[in-house]
Image 1: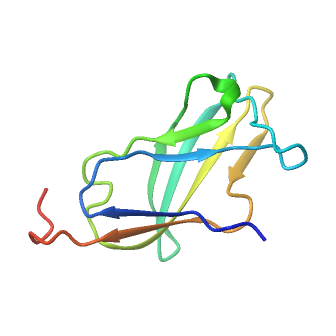
Image 2: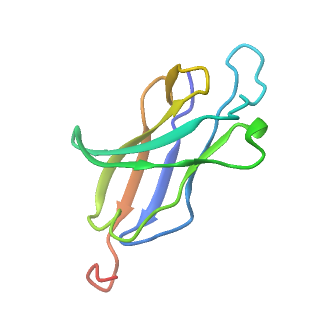
Length: 115
């Protein structure tokens, strides 16, 4: 069973970015993401609250995708679920993680949640 990835951020944080290394399940080697596009999806209680362009880190052969958090992406504290959707140059689409979701825990700011 794969270990669940958990990101913990404070309300209104804009960093560090969400990152995920994509590896070939058979070989364990990084997947070459040259020519791929990335979408980052974030959900609260099964409802999508964010669908935004992510990126492939350089070098693309290293297999790392990321999403740079924008202002107000994490405006509301709570327990969220996330995933990266990769569209490969060949036209196939895969969503990661393949099993389950990335858990995102957004904890409240002590100053009342103002940016």
